Length: 223
Image 1 (cartoon, one colour):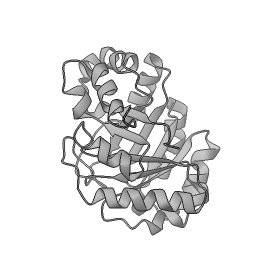
Image 2 (cartoon, one colour):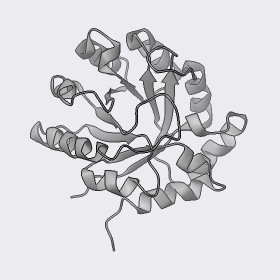
Image 3 (cartoon, rainbow, N blue to C red):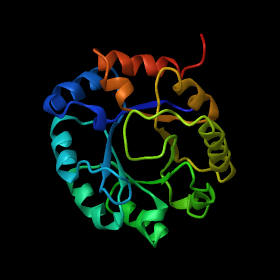
Image 4 (cartoon, rainbow, N blue to C red):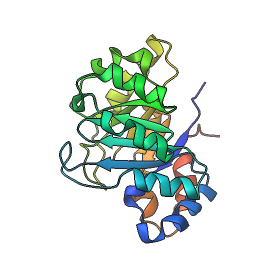
């Protein structure tokens, strides 16, 4: 059975001056989660938003807020993002010394616990903590900037990630982020991903809500 599909617009590419309007548009278009990219200028070469934006989003939508921390010492931010209303808290194993402990703390704060793997990060990092994962995020670009091109070899890693989850009977979501568009989402879906983050592909078009629908169509089996 094909897993349920989730489309997650990333507000990194939204117009923050029209944030409420754009979130409303993608929600009307059937978006499942709202994705928030948090960068500290150290783990990745960019600086973005923090818990305040998550709190603002929580005031304008009831959709799950999927927060991806590209920061050093993510453990410092678990409680603040939980208090702000985050639903999913995903971080990178290279950013902390005690991955399993942080995953447990995320769950203790009432959020789903996610682990993100960069293109060069071995899948074995996830295998060691598979029982503590609610979500596995395979980065299909090197993180730090929006509107990058999907790395073709990512599809093989997505397929291996799906095999790993099946091997351990894990119910964790398999999410992909980076270069997801009409041209690439079908390949990522076929490889085994079930949760798709898209930023510029959604928010750079005139009708973001319709684009959510178009992306979903490319994940569904042919009629």
